[in-house]
Amino acid sequence: MQPAKFDYYRPDTLSEAVELLTSVDGARPIAGGHSLLPAMKLRVASPAALVDLGRIPDLTGISRDGDSLMIGALATHAAVAASDLAKADCPVLADTASQIGDPQVRNRGTIGGSLAHADPAADYPTLMRAIGATIHVTGAGGSERAIPADDFFVDLFTTALEVGELVTAVEVPVMAAGQSGVYLKHRHPASSYAVVGIAAIVTVDGGSCTAAAIGVGGVTGKPERADAAEAALIGQEPSDELVATAAAAVAESLANPIGDIYASGEFRVHLASVLTKRALSEAFGAGSA
Amino acid sequence: MTSLFTKVSPEPTTDAGVRRITVSINGNQHTVDVEPRLLLAHLIRQGLDLTGTHTGCDTTHCGACTVLFDGTPVKSCTMFAVQAEGHEITTVEGLATASELHPIQESFKDEHGLQCGFCTPGMMLTAKALLDENPDPTEDEVRWALSGNLCRCTGYQNIVKSVLAAAARLRSQGATDEEEGETS
Picture 1 (cartoon, rainbow over the protein chains, first blue to last red):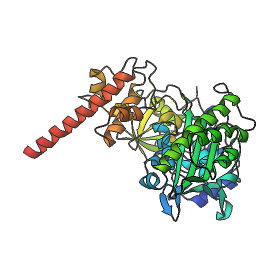
Picture 2: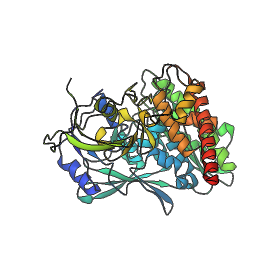
Picture 3: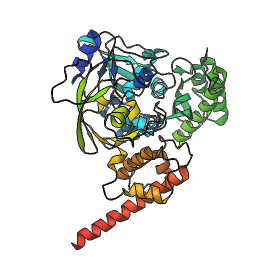
Picture 4: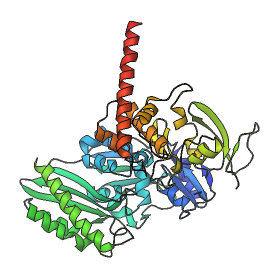
């Protein structure tokens, strides 16, 4: 399969990249290319020009900044999965990265690309909503914005990014004392995409759950928060019954589920409930250990 | 069928739709003029006649087109050739020398690690990257490393055995080399 023709640009700096994306008609950025290139082969996407971000320095680092990790947009999934900093300060981030695709995909795919593409079956967006990440972007004239994950994902393959804006870094809060996070998915057997993915981040203090965030991916057009399930957990002592009650409430946040040939919308909602139960059990187990 | 690449002429290209790139493949520098939409897998196979790199699914799933990109396995059907400019590519042709097979190839032969052979180049290159980084992997680690390579003959048992055997072979070679180094 051969993509349609396009013009190719390879800027050396972020400002050049932004300039090209705003001035060249129909230009789209490409990093690892593991979402865009397959879409181009299918001619679902036929950008007139590609701006290759692959040679822009300083966008691959992973560092600690106060109570957050700053992940450069060009950090590959393999780099995040192998990062000692991520494994120590935010294990669920490294673990999520290790579940994306397969080893070859993780060697090329980038965190910025995954978030900007906003595939409903991707893994990172679900985690970012649950964990309260902030997406840092740079646009025309070097203007910068910090967009909370809650506002970043708008709909199916649609984000709050304006034309010319590029994701530069993802700010992920580190796990606090008593806090633990789990990401689980029902993996599509061929593509390894999440049929349904669940990210559960819980805090247990003095024997009761004081904070909970549950992200649900793969069921609707964008990652959702399971508000009703979260509310059921707050102030309660973790138990199997509590987890079951919360998991049963997940469906309330999943209006208009999307189905396909592999899994109907109804089945996806069911999977979301089952996986929430497993993710919460594991998260509470880790918190009490 | 129109070609998306040409073996380079001495004159600089004047075609705006074409880009001149130099890529190192198995240690040899290749300078070619390519359309930006040319896939790395097609440059390797049709442009440079290195047909050991197979294209299977063409959708980033099967791993038959796996090559090493600066030492890490990537699927060459999901990269543009222009993205490889200035990088080091290793294909299956880069494993053996003129006189002997690579220990990974020897082990695939001994342990019946291939049936139809279509997935084998990708399997061996992924195995090489694993063993370069982890010379003594567990069976689980081998299976995890190979999880992006599909074998439609479902010959996974012997593929895993082959990689473990290759690891042992490489370790014992390394030990022999060290001993020889000490006595010489």
